[in-house]
Length: 438
Image (cartoon, rainbow, N blue to C red):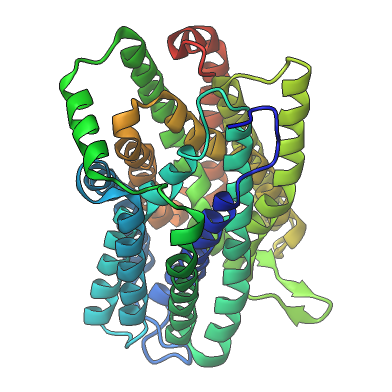
């Protein structure tokens, strides 16, 4: 492979398109889910009529499963089925789950649909990303940029989804919005099935010889360098847990705050609350170019920050976003009126910069530091902090009115900024344990 070329392989774009369909479905459904649960069963949009406490806990548990099950899906992909087949299985489960969820606003379709979607994520999430790592040799400078580009491209689906699903939900009800999400996954998976054989070729496939080689390698003890690199993965995952706990408030407490405290009137037109879920993925798709250019520029002059520094900065930017949210809380409290929507957009802007500095870099880190025979499994482990974060985040969302928006946002801001500074302070030790794969 030519390491000096900055051109990305065509396979990256097919993988990104496949991921975009899944992200469309997830963000389209997520934009509606909290509102769907608290809406009245006989209301025009036909909701589940849950209390805010129940809705917050269900939201947290569902999203936790979506990020916890990839650990097991990654193991199955590494040992038995391979990444290519795992993506197909996951896509089918997600389509069936969204179709089930859109049947009726009763407990059977609701629980069954969410469970099927969570299982589908278990197969889909760790493997669609791990295939990107197979496209590059170790040391290829395009790897970090490839994950950022992938992140940008699949977020196109994520920012379009709340707009389209939210519009359909307003016009025809929440169940119709879920149906649109199901159709998007079907289209992306159909594209994947048609083009994967010619574009991906052997990427993501486990042949008999490769399985035997993996089994042989697994029987060999890990080297000291491999153990050190695994240590770095787990240390950074500890910090990442609290990043996602704060970040995932976007779909719960920040959505509730937007519904209640943000003036959504734009030139006489009321912007749907669900549409604000498009702000973050839209910014990912646009700001990603600037972040990629920044890393390339710094790489050329020998100043590219190490992975721990980038991830620490990501946490600090997340905290700054919640400081902006404090401004919105004070504005609404001082005037007794709803706060300007520029507050919530500004918060999402800073949090998105944090996400771009942490999430795609973390994905790239896994493919660099994990032992070759365990990449999909460790990609599943990468999602475990998000599993824990959704449990904690759902708990926070359920009690935010008891604690108050201001207290909650201030606590999150202070905590993640301190942790971000801590990562930067211990960077030298982490870089040493990475043994050149920084």
